[in-house]
Amino acid sequence: MPNISICLPDGKRIDIKVRDSIRANRFIMRVNQQTSEFCISRPIWRSIDEARIFVERNVPWIAEQLMKLPARVQFRHGSIVPILGKEYKIAHSPKEFGNVWLKESLDNKMPELRVSGGSEHMPRRVRDWLKKRAKDEVAYKAKKFSSLLNKEIKSVSVRDTRTRWGSCSSGGNLSFCWRLIFAPEKIVDYVCAHEAAHLVELNHSPRFWQTVHQLVGEWKSSKKWLKENGARLHRYG
Ligand SMILES: [Zn+2]
Image (cartoon, rainbow, N blue to C red):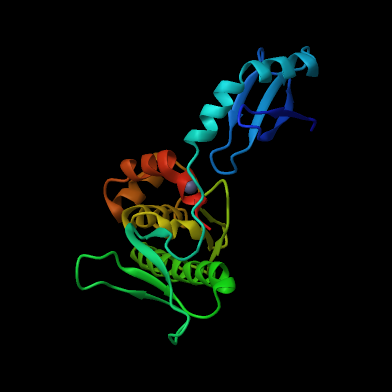
């Protein structure tokens, strides 16, 4: 895929991926909220030069989109991360024993996610801990829901998936995106119930949604929440 490289008013250069499209009847530019990448669809009868002119004409739009993208939150001292809907401040505590642990607060201060050891290891330690926490959570919930349906799960795993929050194989292997840990608990419940319901119905038929409803009650708002906020869960770490 060829790229169009352009210079923004602040001097920053960015690359726009060009995708040839037989269906597009005009230039369409999009930004991926998760990866912050820009891409332009080019109708096959329009030239690359024309695509470049289109991109250059839309530099103000590109700059505006870049401003609106959710800022990345690194796993370092002082960063705030939500865990199942509750906010924690990452606090480096090099001399304490432990590895990573939650320190709830007795006064009104924000609770902390404390990390011991060298600061260079903090990002990896926080990430590993959150992944493990995510796996424990989804495994517990998925098992609870599957037993309500009298079904057995073969395995539960967590991955860093970009396009889906969960999946269920016909053999009963469930997989979830570990970044669900940054979502409110109600949302995690919905995704786990959704995948558990696939143990009964391997489709999205009305009967499938009835099963989801049976497990978690009203689910449409959770589905909507993921659609609207899901990309933001990818900005951590
Ligand atoms: Zn599904």
